[in-house]
Length: 274
Length: 346
Image (cartoon, rainbow over all chains, first blue to last red; front, side, top):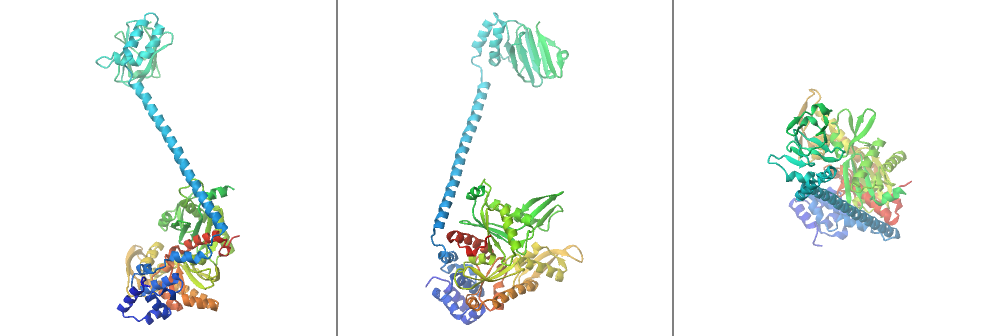
């Protein structure tokens, strides 16, 4: 019976020079209860919930902070409560069923979480593959080149015999020849067939350019950029399509070609080298 | 059937649907929600929508523009606005189940004032059902408060509970899991606030809002003359001059302001003791009466009641959450042993 709020309360009461009788009157408690609290004689006290309440009131009466003193009281309220409800909470089949059901629910929720994590992980992997795959393809497109010289040589060889077949190869060469025969000023030159007529395209803005052979075969089609003049060599005839004619300047064999007469709605279509 | 499946993903809730605050208790987790019972409604033409619920809405009380009204859907412990209560419950139930992606359908136990009529109970049941509950049980508030306070309700011993809520004060004498005597007085925290507003208007000639009155009550309010006089500075609109003025109130003035509602509570406690069967009265005289609810936090209310009734008066631990916790325990007891006499179902 050593642990408890009794001694603290008793000391505080004596310090204030108050008799137990007065405390009992003030709290409307029987004298023996007050004495039992001071003696930590818990057997004398009623239900712990009430006893804790009495201790709280007593502490308040003595102008002490009730919470730490009530904490000293050995039986916490929760414990008291479970003890009270013990008689009702005997294990019954219902309780067992309820417990199983709860466990099932918990497992189900875990399943949902795990399943969600797996699906999420898969999605993430797919996303990564998609993104990385994409950038690899881009890399392949932007770093072309080393095959250039051989294939261009091949084009040159084949071209005189058959313009059509040359265009086939030419199409492939388009990109590769860019680096191969870039001039000092960045002009990109390209040989389209065996002829020696030259076309020079210069752009002030982005402009779509398409060059076709007489039979409709596409020799070149790409977006022209302002910083990259394009030079084509060949005799033609070529039909040319400029997506945004105001931004383009065309020279054929060193002579400027007026685009305005061929332009409708900013799109120029013309045939050169006939 | 669907409700059953959704029920598997929901948790049993005990809801203390109070006039001032709504508390939700979840088994194994304790009190998970404690918010003011306030809903802010936005009106656009003929359409009404919920602008905010709970704490956010409470901040709007008395400060809303024309198209928003912040209302308290419960009055005197019962539903005053059925639809808004339903919206509020739906919001709170959703909030408790925030991290589940299936629409929750929990079993719900709601606490009702013991003097509420059949119509009022049905209103609460229906609004809980339309808020998504799959099963609604009602328990009388003082019963839940007694269980929450840890009182020995199932024993053949009388215990007396005084639950002072926002809108009502419930007084009940309980024995053997049943309510022997019960009474509801429509006096609670709100009436205290109103009394303070009226007092300040009368003595200072100034108008203060309910929120300010509540702050005054919490900071310096007392039910019994204090040794130490506390003071508070408040600002209100002067009625004569029409401009805001600052003035000081002390705890004795507030004590005077609270006299009327306090005496109503004291009267109700006395009349409960008068009408109590003698055996139970002697039990109560021995153990005393227990105060729960937010009103129990009013300074020295226990001293006042002890003096007026001549009984030991104790304040339950954590009085604000007693009812919700008790409701949760009642749900557990109900599951454990089919202990149906605690609960009313239809």
